[in-house]
Amino acid sequence: MSSATAQAWPENDGGINLRLRFRNWRRSRPFWGGLLAMIAGVPILYFPYAELNLAGMTVSMATTAGAGSLIIGILMMCLGLTAWFQPLVRIFCGVATTLLSLISIPVSNLGGFGFGLVLGLMAGGLLMAWAPLKPVALVEDAPAAAAPAEFTGEAPVETTQPLLPAQQTPAEAADSAAPAADPGEQR
Image (cartoon, rainbow, N blue to C red; front, side, top):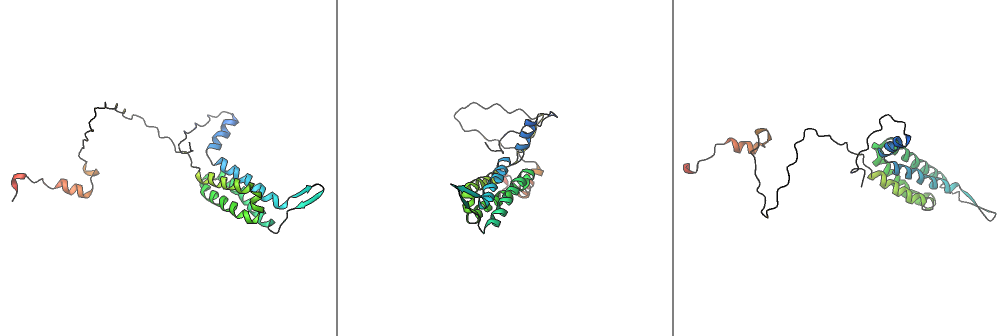
C-alpha cells in the first residue's frame, strides 16, 4: 500500500493527544525519507573527522576532503528537514539526496563506509516516491448502483443514446443537421 492508496486519517477534533497529532503530522509529509536523509548525513559528516583509538594507537581519518564531507553531510541533513517542512519540494530533495550520496563515495571515505551511502540512496528513493493523499470527495445524493445482471451466456447488448448538441463534436453536429436522404429518392 502506498500513500496514494491509503485512506485519509481524520483530523483530531481539538484533543490533546500528542501521539495522534504527531501521527497526523507524520502522515502528511515524507517523514521516513526525510529522517533517513538526516541520519545518512551523520556518518558522511563524522568519519572524516573521527579519531579512533585502537590499542593505544590513535587512528585519524582526517583527509583533505574533510570540507567536502562537511558540506555533503550538512546538505543532506538540511534536505531531510526541508522535505519535512516543505513537502512540495520532495522531488528536488530526493534527487539532491541521491546525487549527494553518490558524490560522497569518492569524497567522504566511500560514503561514510557505506552507511551514509546506503541510507542516502534509500532516503532519495523514499522522498521521490512519496505522494500526498488525495482528498476523498463526498458524494451526496448519488444514484444507487444498479444490481448486476444475471449471466445468460450472451454478449450484452449496447444501447446508445443520441448526444445532445452541446456534447457533439462539430463533425457530428454537421452530420445530424443534414436531412437524412430517403432511400426512395435516389437520383
